[in-house]
Length: 329
Image 1 (cartoon, rainbow, N blue to C red):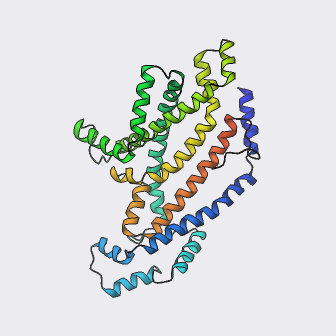
Image 2 (cartoon, rainbow, N blue to C red):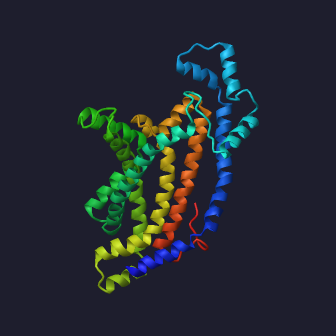
Image 3 (cartoon, rainbow, N blue to C red):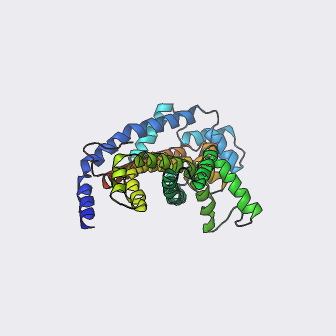
């Protein structure tokens, strides 16, 4: 135990500020590119934020009121001036205010983020708890009836879009079994979005982990361990699992990043007040500051997730070092 802790400690020391700064600098062109594309798409869309503002407020707007709104929010300025103004405010730590309710964007992000993070963590943990043992089992007992049944279910499940799974769960839990209300107002509201995403991800994870474990089980050193009398459980859940963890971490990091950016439809289906629903509502109302704020948050979250993944690469595979062969996303 001591040696494991010392190895992890020594590896952690290699995670230097120089590497951290290098990865953050690589993020800058990504943020610029993503925000520029997002800003361009919003700018070119036919809807007018001024009209949307008064329409959603239920207030009849005169041309003077529309012009005043555009002037107050600099919407009457050229495209690159608007984009430049947004960057100047962003670099000062100001994400602006919502066009719809005038509240600070940062405040709205901080209110919505915990909801999205909660279903992301819940669904990811559930996915790994279910997928790791089932994937390894299917790799080891591929000819068993249970493994073939799991394989058939995952094949079907992979072809079903996650939002369809969400609608089916919504119908079953609310209309058939009456376990939850349609729009629960207590903590049970996190259960159905988490289950929906977990099922959608588990179908893919089981197949991927099965493939990784099958490849590992075919290696010569596994035959050597069996010849030495090492037990099956120890081989599967210590040796094979540990060897496969680098690829599992890669899969998890990519999935978690895409999960944060892909929950919009699920949150809308279940009326879950997270970043996804906030983004959908902002796109509908053409609330540019909110859209840009959510996009930047998602990009930075994705980068941080991959930084954490790089640390775990070295923990599970001592051959990988940040100064050498790093798994960079």
